[in-house]
Amino acid sequence: MIETIVFYIFAFSTVVTATAVVTVRNPVHAALFLVLTFFTSAVIWMTLEAEFLAISLVLVYVGAVMVLFLFVVMMLDINIARLREGFVKYLPLGIAFAFIMLLLMLNVVTSDIFSNEAMLEPAAKAADYSNTKALGSVLYTEYVFAFEIAAVILLVAIVAAISLTMRKRTHTKFQNPSEQIRVRKADRLRIVKMPAEGE
Amino acid sequence: MIDYLTSFWLSLPAELQFTVYTLIKVVIILVPLFVVVAYYTYAERKVIGYMQMRKGPNRVGPKGLLQPFADMFKLMFKEIIIPTNSNRYLFIIAPVITFAASMSAWAVMPFTDTLVFADINAGLLYILAMTSVGVYGVIIAGWASNSKYALLGAMRSAAQIVAYEIAMGFALVGVLMAGGSLNLGDIVESQSGSPWNWFVVPLFPLFMVYLISGVAETNRAPFDVAEGESEIVAGFHVEYSGMTFAVFFLAEYANMILIAMLSSLMFFGGWLSPVPSLIGDSIGWLFFKTALFMWLFLWFRATFPRYRYDQIMRLGWKVLIPVTIVWLTVEGVMVYFKVGPWFA
Image (cartoon, rainbow over all chains, first blue to last red; front, top):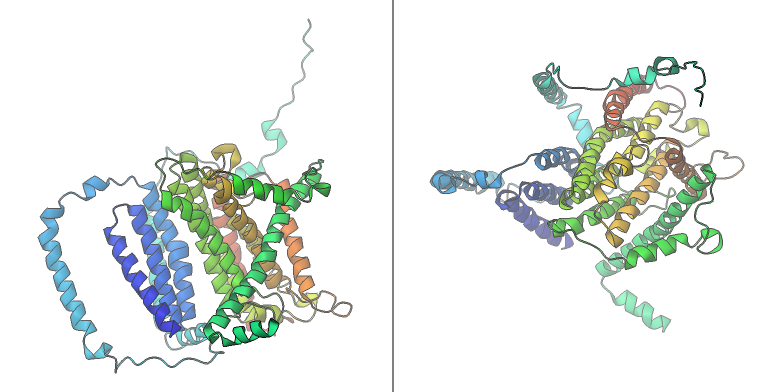
């Protein structure tokens, strides 16, 4: 009973916030609505007893990815008027794509794979069931190969991103902290002896 | 009368009874927390005062003991000024987010082996997630204020938290490798025995990393560039006054106490006694250890000058993260060979 109410509240707010992400005008507001969408979907996962996935969704997407996103969006001076240009021009194409997407989704969602008979309500787990442990044991035994490949792909992406931004910038000024730490009194300070100045 | 009340209580539906019980438990945790926060601000001013050869607050009440209440009433009756051209709703919501995140992290905190509000399996992960949500309050406050200083403070805070959260997460990975659980109560139980069994012994570098990133995560000196009075006035909360400011303040101090308590739970055996033969395990030990770490925060503030922004980034990315990676490898080897009393 309560689970159903919780589900409907958060499912409804997921849909509302997800719609708001693409409809609000201010990009910062859009990013914040995306954060809220992640949060509400995490709650829905939580009601499915997938606590590890729910918490890591908050931890990774809300806590790290979206912080960086907001960081960038706040720094950029986005000209909203220019973004809104050509709305009418692209509208027919947009509607056509939306229609095709809707048809495809309806086709998938109404198929037998997602029917109520195929997707039975999962049985409630015992109190000592640990979602984290279950996921970990599957991930590091059955799917360890796929897991390692995903890790390597991410590593390649990191290396690629860093190598794209690594360039010699001769005009920038920067401090060398280790040099600053190693500095001694003799390097900076010189005591001179001079006669006292008379009146 | 009492009979009537009991029968009325029993006639309520079970869900309502559960909700009321839960709310009472929340109050039992949060009210003492607020009192501790209030007197922590007093202790901060006193301790730093004595460290700097002055007395600190000494006028309101005996020895200035009523100072926190004077501050509280002052903040409560001050006007909340919302800057023109600021984003009204986000401006008000920002302190609420910070406050809610720092309070909700306390839900899984175990005080003894039986005294815990929500004994969930993924407790450690939950705390890490909740503390990382708190940064949104800071970022939103900085952006919604429509002020240069506030935006600069928010930017600094966002970069700093992203950098230190990775180090903090890795340090916690070390703890859960040693404890074999994400449940905080189980982590403490696996340190039982003597002080030699506490995780600070095999995981000392990770403990240092955790403590440093904990200070950075709470935006405390010497990592308080997000506030940076000397260059950006008060950083992200420069436009906040009255209760909205007080809520930020409360959240910051509650977070400091949270980090202090987590350090004592994960590395110093929580409620386990250091002298089991003399005094048994009790909640008092947890509070004692937490108080030591809380004092450490004040000591830091009185001792260290503020880091420069680039130094903070360098320390986070180039020092703390490599240290954790190296020590996780060492720990992996120790786990494999079942070293000492910790990984046996």
